Image (cartoon, rainbow, N blue to C red; front, side, top):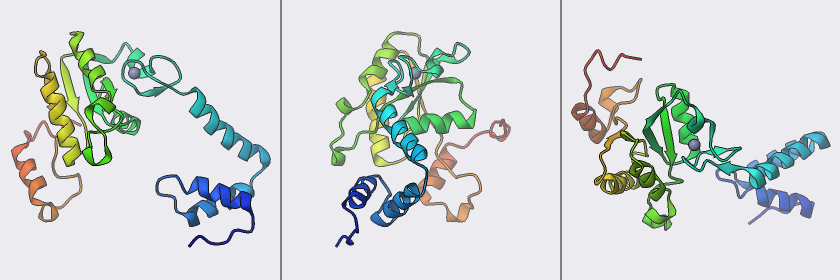
Length: 207
Ligand code: ZN
């Protein structure tokens, strides 16, 4: 049962915050009480940033990354390798891969992965636009960097099949033991994959 709130305005605000992923009603209340203690200008700025973001944000017409113009800064960057595309689920994965500073190609944001349970099929994702980019002919390699889940595997396989008619190399990010993991605690599938996908000693220390 929901607790009784002393104000309907407060209750409405809690209801809105509690719609966010990972935010329960207690956390929602704590965040709102924190906001209430701030200056009007701080709260106005907070609300304005959200409204502006939602109303004016754009998605890159090429890679579907979030941006302020029609084409994102990554796609516009002429110093990057435009013949390699890293396929990711969402914008936050673009940021994660960028943070590694190990990739200098372009991206393609699918907007999710195929998940029949959640009612997400290939048509709901930016897969056709990926095929179109490859069909244009200048792409040499597609790197699949999706979740290592069944849904991720299904999506990898779907894309791989779709790309089969084209002269493009399709690779997948390595799966294996995480840095800092102890071998004895690794699950069998991961350990097995790590052995199959082993790398030459000198190559694994290129970083
Ligand atoms: Zn882009």
